[in-house]
Length: 500
Image (cartoon, rainbow, N blue to C red):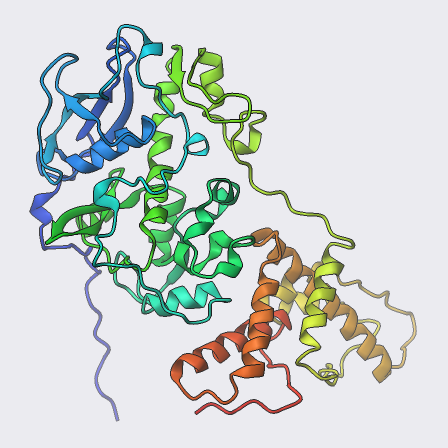
């Protein structure tokens, strides 16, 4: 009996966001140059922003004003002119600036000498966060307060996923989503130095791992997560308020043939639970790299550097300016934050394994040795076998499993004790490989906190019946399953409540 032959469909067309697709630009040459009036016109462009907000090229006025203001030392009273000494450009916050060039001014400054003008902040690491002084459109109105789910504060990734409805904040998709940091995780030292932990939800995180608090997390589809972090391709900015409230919209900073039509100027799925302070810090983090051409122009620059050695603005020569564009990993003595080095511990990998084991003993009992293939014998090449069978983790460390010489005469098979010892050795190698991978992505061993959380849930949530509690238990099973190196669940002294 047949249902007929299979029907194939034509190749998938590139999706389009048809609503308002004719209101934006797709031309990568549409941009606006912002000039500093104290420098000559051949070297005074301190910021260039893409202008995709209109088909003919235009940029949201408030976004441009705030971007220039934060680079100029968090000044929100600036204004634009079309010429160096021309009249002020008077626009409403949500009106559009046409492509071209504009001069950015601040009241109270003279532009005859560069040291009498406003200084430029050269990089994100030297920028001072404006606590209690965010631009007006970036503040939540009095009748809108950030709200957050109280779920699983000790597992922020799960909390963010549940809070966001397992849905990407940009695309609305539910598949292939990952948890993204709003203030990037590599800015951890800056995060603490600028007291950004005051905005966390879980006060227990204020001294450690505060940057991974649920308030600094959001869900993004994996490709958008990469563009958000590595490419700095888009940010979230307030646009077109409804009533007395500004909505956060996706704003592209560089051209994209696909992301532009799909997402530019589209309203994000609710970002109210995320403090505006973190969204504004992310905006600044993406803007400051655009200042680098100004610093590399082989001209002296009047810069504002806040450090222990220098607190007043100062004129820096071209070579000194170049230092502010050097990646932090190779910079020395500039006062910029550096990624925290991995803290050495006694025994390193062994230390983490012992800590893990100590936690698991709270839940697990002595388990029996897994079944071993009867074919195990001194003549078998175990590295080859391990590389052919088992999980990716076992394959990763299989190369380090020793091989045994083949004897001239047939040897009796191994005893159970020999097989058990060999399996234990292999398990240790596998666990060591897992630890190495964990350290690469989590040098501070923060995943041990998740183990603590999972154990705590399983000790106290057995009587829970709501779906949220079961989500905790599922996550606990996943975490402890990974820590144990297998998908098998470790057994508690008291049996777990079965799935409802």
